Image (tube, rainbow, N blue to C red):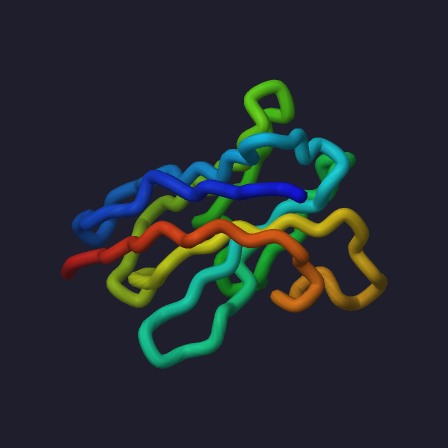
Length: 125
């Protein structure tokens, strides 16, 4: 069992940068793939970016260049660095962990077994 806790969200102005954190408590998750998803009001939970246990990064094409994922296994934490934030980035951001990624399914939310409670981000124009 992996318990994930997201933090770092808030209210920011467009054009600024922000870093979110996803920390595993009570267990290590260095052997898990971890991904960030986001869900805007009324929308489905959409894939943002992920990182495997070996450090391979996979990202949504539309967000490449602005959003960067990294992990620090010593701190049991995965980060999401977000640059040039826009109002369309407003959403609740969730991290999910998967012990195994099946081929072709890494972008699907149902591939991830463990989830945090989410951290809300609002970007004002």
